[in-house]
Image (cartoon, rainbow, N blue to C red; front, side):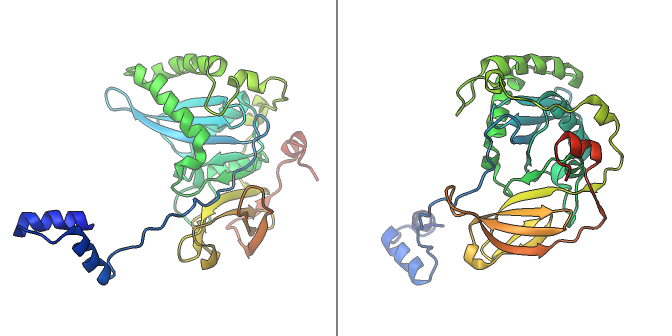
Length: 319
C-alpha cells in the first residue's frame, strides 16, 4: 500500500489525514518503502532460425465448444517462415502431443530443433528427472529439444502471435457445436494463412519463404516402426532458465545451483543424455562469446540407447 492509499483509507475512518509526503516519510523511516529501480531487461539467448525448420515452436490452446466439450489445439510454427501445422484433440496428454508432432513432421518437415514451453504434456510433469514421451520421441528421431524459460510466454513469441491470429480470425468466427466439425474449417483457415498472410517481422507469406529450400519430411513407414514404449536415446535436451535471487534454477524438476552472482540472468543448460552430463552456459549479449559456468553429472533413471541406425543415417547423425 502506498501513501495515497493510506491517506484515502485514513480519511474514510478518521477524517483529516496527514499529507502524502508525511505518510511517505513515515513509511521510509520504518523501512517500508522499496527504492524504485529501473533495470535493463536481461538478455535471453534464442536459437538461430536461418532456414525453414531450423526451429519449430509448439504450444497448446484450450477452448470449449457449445455443450461444454473441451478442444485442445496444438500449434507448431516454423520460426523462419511462420508456416504452421495445427491439429485438434480432446486431451493434451503426451500421447496427443506426439500425434501432433508426427503429423507436423510429415507435413512441415523434420526440425533441427524442437522448442516447447514447460507444459506437462511436453516436459513430463512434476517428477524429478522425468523424460517425457515427447522428449523420447524427439530423441528417437535425432531431434534436439529446447524448453523455454519458466513462465515466460513472450519467449515463444512466434507461436503466441499465431495463437492470437488463430483465435481472432478462426475460432471466434466459428460457433462449433461438435469437435469433428473443426478440422475441415481449420484446414481452410490454414490454407489462407500459408498463401496470403504475412506475419509480423516477416517479408512474405509462409509458402514463398519456404520456396527453394530442401524439406526433409517424415515418411509414413518410419512412423509405423516406432516402438511403444519409447526408450531414451542419445541426444541433447536444452533449456533456457532464469536464475533466481538465491542463485538457483530448475532443470527437469531438479534444483540446479548456479550462484548468486548470476541472479536475474538467463543461462542455457544442455543435457547430453549419452554422457549424462549437464552443462551450464552463459552469454551476456547476442554478440558475446558463450562462457561455460558449470558442469554436473546428471544420472538418468534408465539406460540410454543410441539413435536407431535408420534414423541416424537418414538424418546424417551416424558417427
